[in-house]
Length: 175
Image (cartoon, rainbow, N blue to C red; front, side):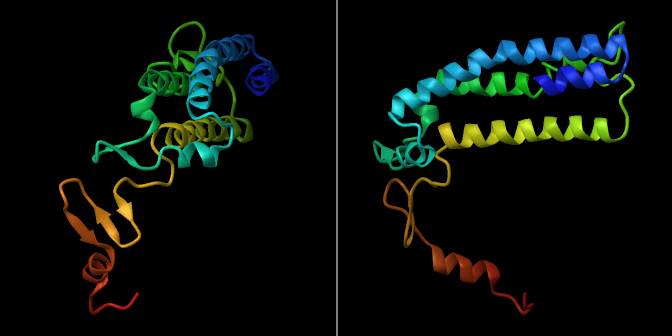
């Protein structure tokens, strides 16, 4: 938040300063929703260890529903999804960098390295939100129904992994 406010101030323009302050206020306002969503997941799984949270999402319910956090805490998923979109200033929460009107936002008269740094920061925020959603709600690295010998689908269907790999990569071309 300091970086966004200081970026608006460093451009030596009052409109960019107002845009930076408005973007900072927007960031602060969505921190509460993100924090509540993350705390609810931590309370559900009983640990702060991210690996243990992902391991707690392993397995299935009733033989076919993955035991992911999205099925355990759907409201927290929606909160983190929308708060993450707002935090990274994505549509429809991108009013802090409006180009039309009296206040063009934070990016007014910012060029070169400063603009590149601000855009890189925005994309890093998006990647972080995607990582948090995957870790807390989509099972992390775990794939449902995947065992060591292949996929064991509900209803008894089975897909052997080595046979699939041979059929996909068998060709006359060498890699």
